[in-house]
Length: 70
Image (cartoon, rainbow, N blue to C red; front, side, top):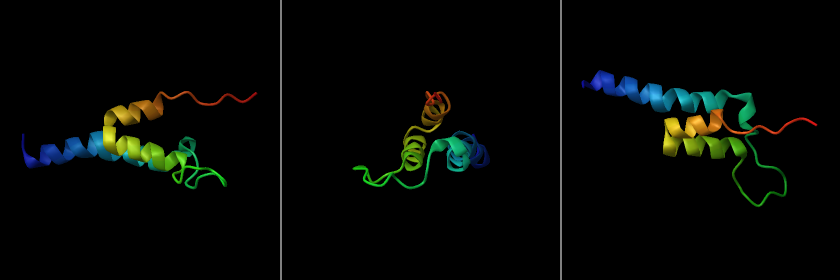
């Protein structure tokens, strides 16, 4: 495998999912809720998961259960 192929694989399996989470409207807000004990927002949490788990983190993001409107 050449260097170019390696960069393409990294871009496809880490870069594009990370970009998807960063630009997605359903990822949650960039800031955490006022009074929340966790300093990270939902979107930052998803970005961290995609960074650490790569394609598996992105699959978790895509296949997560979304809250249903009542």
